[in-house]
Length: 134
Image 1: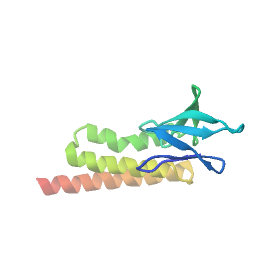
Image 2 (image 1 turned 135 degrees about the vertical axis):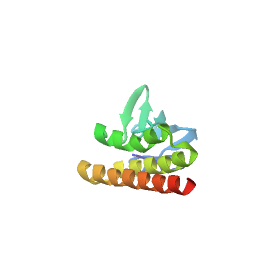
Image 3 (image 1 turned 45 degrees about the horizontal axis):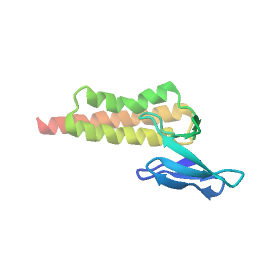
Image 4 (image 1 turned 60 degrees about the vertical axis):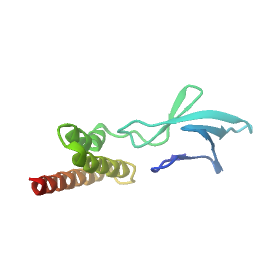
C-alpha cells in the first residue's frame, strides 16, 4: 500500500514499512526476508502512484475513469488558456482538491459532481479576482 501527501510517500508491505533509500526509491521487504528495490512514480492527472518492481509496474489504486481524469485536469487546462500567475495558483489548488476527491470512496457520479462544484468555485473565484483587478 502506498500513501502520498505533499511530502514523501509512505509505503507499507503488509504491516512493515518500506525503507526509503532516495527520492522515489524504496527497499520493500519480500516474503523470503530479502529486500527488493522499487521505484514509485505518479502521473500528473492520476491520483494513484505506481510502484515499479523489477521492470513491472503495479498500481496502488483503482484506475480512474477518463471523465474524472478530464475533470481533474480542467482547472489546469483553463489556466493554460490564459490564467496567469494568480489563475495558476487557484487552478493548481483546484486540481489538488480534485485529485483528493478522486482518491475518495464516493461513487464516480458523486466524484464528478464534486469536481464540477470545485470547477464552478474556481471559475467564480477567478471571475471575482478578475473583476477586482479591473
